[in-house]
Length: 634
Ligand code: ADP
Ligand code: ZN
Image (cartoon, rainbow, N blue to C red; front, side):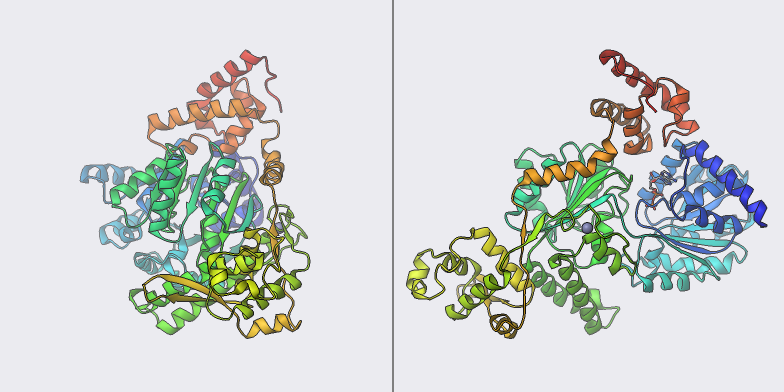
């Protein structure tokens, strides 16, 4: 394609995006990615979740007037995408195993008649002879591979069926193949290109930072209260809480429900019906709070998730990025809170050791599996303990540089955690107390001795006679527990897990080689302390959220949400397919009074205006009339 021709084509694409989606500007790399598709050159586009990958193959398909085949890993994902496209007036269908023969025939007919622009299928279907015969007959020229990292064993989500996709290039030598993923590691990218046999592809890699997410790492104290804090900060908003084990999921769900919250559990131990209904509940906004293991996530594309919380450390930064990626897909602000304790590292190490000896490692060499797993664990625990800007730490981990000095959206940059003055001295006092106690005692006992409490055990062992007895008596219990935990995390104290004769498990705090470096002033440590009041925290959060809520009439926003849910229900769609939260907020700010000013709101394309414009205009008019508000505020 010549340059001038390409330019005019690109301006046509923009026109299509305006008309169908109601967006008037492109996100970073969308133009380049569409160019690859329009030129028929293989490509790999890596953008974080919510970056707008799907538009890159959808808009060109409409412009060209031919059918693009989209490979997607889950039927539920396909259905959502097809529904979402239909809502915008784009002819899209899926073919899957749940359809009857006559439904299938009707679909094939419309495909042959050239009526369809986007066809969604599973990788298995692509391998079926009669199906690829059909595609060959109608000369399909473009394939889009969604969640392309599923083809790589090195990714976090390998699916054997994706291996079938290697055949595309053989079966359709003239077609271009475009791979899309949010996975950032270099090995996986190279593997995707190799596995799919992409030829001289355009490789487009976006910025991994998600500026709309605020990251916080807190040391885990009373986790239920910490969870409640976060949930209550997000009253009426959607959130996902990840726990490490199924048991923890069930327990936390029970407690949250006891506190009157409509929390729903999700993990692989539930029946597939239970899991499906939990997903459905969350997706259709019947419930806002999911408590889950990492089994939950793939196929969840609810775009207005406002917080993702981890009650324990995930097993790698890749996992963390993937799971927090589910927050704020609509580009609006969202919060990610991770509760960390040095015990998590121990827990994961023992889980990994167990799985290294079982099926997980069957495909790989178990010692290299363990080595890699341990490396990932060390990296994420360093992230948790670190006092580097979280945005910077994540972006740099994924091999990119971070230009800003301060992100303004993490606990470190917001100054929510501060260094403890005289950290070294405090560390030395704690360590020398551990050394003097001699023997195996837990954190609770150590704290008692440091604070000068004469408990029964203290007296029994005559620890009230130690020179370190009461040496940190002016510090609150929780701070001391935190610092001991941090010293373990820093490797200057060790945790020793013991099973008593009675079968009782407990973990003792003991000194190690590094402890001596601290005592001898050869190693300096920095202890951190969270900010005291949650009020301050709330104020800070509000400031971040302020921008996107500026001028938004919150009452009106809630009314618009209600009508959105009603319309979605009637059609069997997910709520945000009617309009996203971002669009509703803009409506609640602009307060359009007629179709033409409604069409200026981002996310209002022609079809949606026609179908839902009136219903929303009515609600806006009634609201504005009642309180005599200004309308059409541009
Ligand atoms: P990804 O697949 O990369 O996770 P999506 O394609 O689902 O992201 O897009 C995320 C959201 O952003 C969707 O609601 C989409 O409609 C919206 N979006 C995409 N491109 C634009 C754009 N240029 N302007 C505004 N919103 C956009
Ligand atoms: Zn920061």
